[in-house]
Length: 185
Image (cartoon, rainbow, N blue to C red; front, side, top):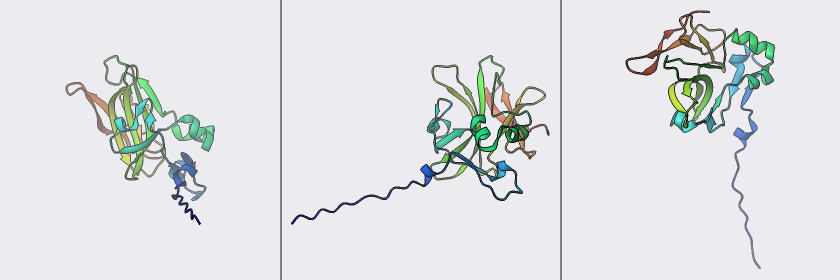
């Protein structure tokens, strides 16, 4: 008599079951961007491998207007953005090279999650990373970009807060840096 033992390894489907972007119904007294959550899964964002964005990241997502509109509705997203954007194209360093600034959500391989802002030069054979700042557990699922009155870039880490930051370019060091608080809106 032959006895056959079949062992099936347990499969974790928790991450696959969760939507990339979701909004909890409660607590209803909080705005949607404080109830929302990202579950980043992509291994490449804006044609940049996640490991090139940051070596400790396992996944990331570029925040997209389409995904927000689908989950929240266009009117609610318009109200939260108040003229700000999730991506901006420009020449942020004054060199004439086209650059793209965008915001996103990341997940470190250790599990920590947060939001980020990045500046890339996409019009190259290999996309060039120019700048990245991450904000672990910002208390919000929304980050937005706008231009300051002087033309520099600004990023806000929620729709109803004043904790925006200016992102400037140092010509001597030839690098971007966080240059202090953004102009209050």
